[in-house]
Image (cartoon, rainbow, N blue to C red):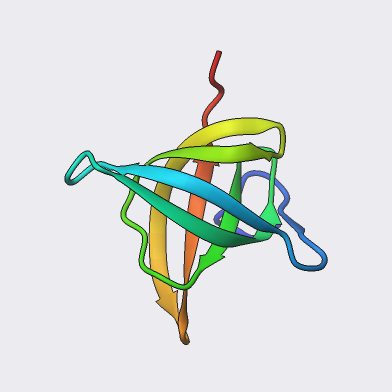
Length: 92
């Protein structure tokens, strides 16, 4: 566990892709993305994308870690791809 996290993250073995939609905070528009899951914790997931993703509300097409939604809190360019962090939000 590193100094920025309060929970352990677990790397994902193999190729695990995920389809999701983001309703961006800036323009309140729906944008579809296909991402690769990099690692996961009980509080969220780190994903890799081929394109920039804007922060906003996330809806997973299939559950990820038992969760159906979350908030995309950050996205940064890393080499030729983008890494992003999604915090799980419990939906009832």
